[in-house]
Image 1 (cartoon, rainbow, N blue to C red):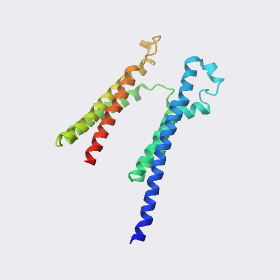
Image 2: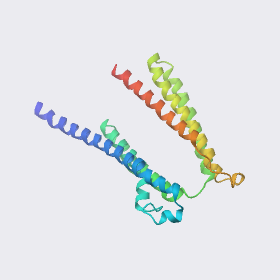
Image 3: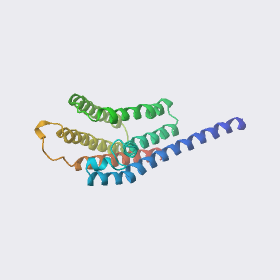
Image 4: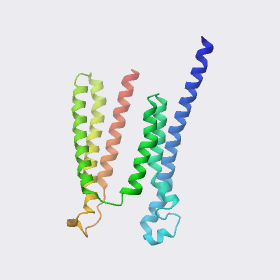
Length: 218
């Protein structure tokens, strides 16, 4: 019996090591390309005209620019595939993350981002808003019957969702201004509040997940 179990344990351990490797590779890809290389790109974008930029290695549509543009999508997808494999969920989630999500990102970056679709923004904004209130409804039903420590963990996450919905609202408003006739000639808005809302949202959700993990260990 021990001889039969041993190979299975070994294969399982190898898969988990591979899954962890994918996670760390994804993290390195995102950090190295988005943060380190991106810093050089942003400096050039701030100091050069588009014509001057086209004469450098950072030309829009060039290899380095595309590599930077896909850094976070690619890194996050690799890390997520590793996470799916690590917890041994259904393989369909890994395939969807690898092919589906990357495919959608690719289509959006290459095809649709150059055109403004008011109808798409209207439908998308409505879907986001309804999804948020659906989450709040499910949250109320789920956490009402739980103990206080579990409610606390969930409360952190709900505050994070609140910041995310507000970030979505301000993103919609500030990007739309650049395509509406009434705002022609106005200065491009600085999305400071969007960054603040996103950062706080991620931090509160992280704290909520950490609290939930502590409860499971206890």
